[in-house]
Image (cartoon, rainbow, N blue to C red; front, side, top):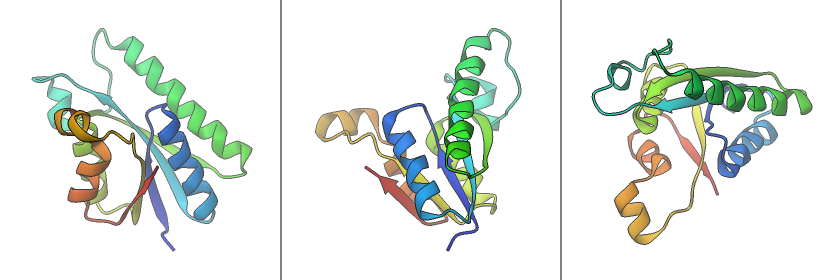
Length: 141
């Protein structure tokens, strides 16, 4: 059983399902919900994975806090403490970077279920994380 599980959250139904799965299947593990604020090209945060504030970024930070608060509340409802983290950058890259840092034993991530052309054009965070992660990844559909 994993001791520390990383669950990326973005406020979608699929990421909520992933968090529920992690809580149900790994109730004794330490669970961390990670929300990544996407950064535009050229944004220094995209390169650094920084967690601080960027001028004019209040709306994104507020939205991020709402997502993380919902994750904490979901854990409280189930009697599980959910730790939360926020980062900035490309979600797939930052999720993998967190796993490479060695703190996590498993990533549980929701799939957005895109198929065909949409997946090819838009890419898939879950697919990229699965391909590049140094730790096992469970994709919840």
